[in-house]
Length: 470
Ligand SMILES: Cc1cc2nc3c(=O)[nH]c(=O)nc-3n(C[C@H](O)[C@H](O)[C@H](O)COP(=O)(O)OP(=O)(O)OC[C@H]3O[C@@H](n4cnc5c(N)ncnc54)[C@H](O)[C@@H]3O)c2cc1C
Image (cartoon, rainbow, N blue to C red; front, side, top):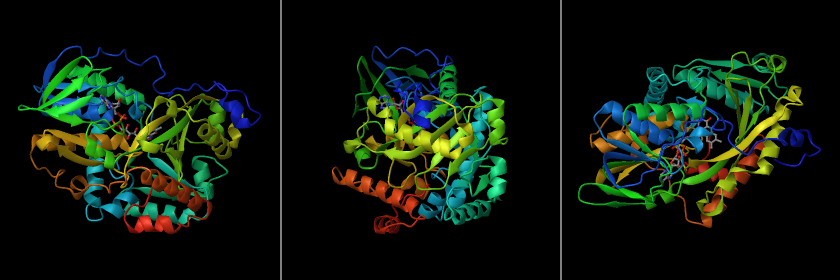
C-alpha cells in the first residue's frame, strides 16, 4: 500500500497490492513437498518455469517410461512464467525484425518452426485440458509518433513476405479497433500471437507433468552440480539427486554453470493490473477483437485484456542492477509504477477513475542477441536454454525440444540450425557491464525522444550486431 498522492495516477495506485495479479488467485495449487532424501533419475530438470515444465512434459511424451525429476527452488511458475504479460508469440527470435537481422539465411525456417511451435502449444492445451484462457487474437502494434509509421509499414510488409496476414490501419481505422487519442496508425499481426493467462498456463503444465508421473519437488533449490561416473550429482539442502542427464532451465537466476554468467543479463520488467472494466468503460475503448497491444518505440508498452476485462499494462522501463543482482525487493519500483500509471491514463484518458489492483515486477533473462541461446556441458550430459528476453512464453517450448535433442545426442533439424549452434556476444565483467547497459538504455530513451534517431553508440552496436530491436 502507498500514500495517496494528488496526481490522478497516484490515487489510482493507492491500493495496488505489491504482488503479481496472476498468482494472487484462489486457483493457485498447493505446493508439493520438497525433496528430503537422496534419489536418482534418468533426467533431472532444474527450474519449474515454462522452460523446465515443457522439458519435463516433452521428455515424458517422448518416452513415457522415462524417470523424470523436476526440482524447483520456490513453487512452479512463481517467477517470470507466472507473472508475465501472457503474449504467447510464434516468434522464436524476439520478433521477426530481430530474426531477420541476426539469422537472415534461416529466418524462413525459424518462422515456420515458430508457427508450428505455437500450433503445438495449442494442441497440448487441448490434449491435457489446460484452461489458460488461450485466445488467438494476434497483436496490434500501434504508432504513437509520426516517425514510427514507416516502421509499422515495414513490419507489416516483412510479415506478409513470410506468408502471414498483416492488416495496416490509418489513424481512424486503428482507433476503431481500440480507441486511444495517442494512436496515429497501427497494424494487426493476426496469425502469430495468442493471449494466455500465464499463471494458469504454468499451473496447467505442472499438473500435466504430475499426471504423466514426473516427480516434482518444490521448495528445493539446487545448490551445486558435480559430475561422476554415471552422470551428474545435484546438491540440494536435504538430499542429492544422481541423474544420468540434466536440463538446466533456471533462466536469469544465479546460473549453476559459471560460463552462462558471461551471456546472461537479468533485467527487471514491470506491470500494472487494473480492476475489471465495466461494460460501459470497455464500450468506450472498443477493443472488440481483444488483440494484445504494443507500441513501437524502443521503450515500449505492452497491454492486453484479461478474461474478466481487466487491463494489464506493462513494459517501458527495463532495469538492470549492478552485478547481475536479483532480489525479491527489486520486484517493487515506485518510480516505474508511477510512470506506467501516468502513461496508462495518457493512452486511455476515458478511463479516468479506474484503479489498479496489483503492481509487480519480475526478472527476465536477456542477452546481447535478445533471443534464446542453447548449449551443453559435462560432455553432453547437461543441456541448457536461456536468454529468451521478453518473449519466452511460446519460445521456451522450442527451447525445451532443443535441450532434449541435445541430451539425446542425436543431430536433429533443430540442433543443426545456426540459431541453435551460435552464441550471443558475451558481456564484459563489472563495472564495464553496467556502464554499457546504462549507456544503451539512455541512448534508446533519447532515440525515442528524437524521432527514432540513433546516436553514435547505438549505431556502433547496430554495426557490431548488438543493436536492440523490439
Ligand atoms: C513482467 C514480465 C512480463 C513478461 N511478458 C511476457 C510476454 O508477454 N510474453 C512473453 O513471451 N514473455 C514475457 N515475459 C518473459 C517470460 O515470462 C519468460 O521468458 C519465461 O517465463 C521464461 O521462462 P523460464 O522457465 O525460462 O524462466 P522462469 O519462469 O524465471 O523460471 C525459472 C525457474 O527456475 C527456478 N530456479 C532458478 N534457480 C534454481 C535452482 N538453483 N534450483 C531450483 N530452481 C531454480 C526459479 O525459481 C524459477 O521458477 C515477461 C516477463 C516478465 C517478468
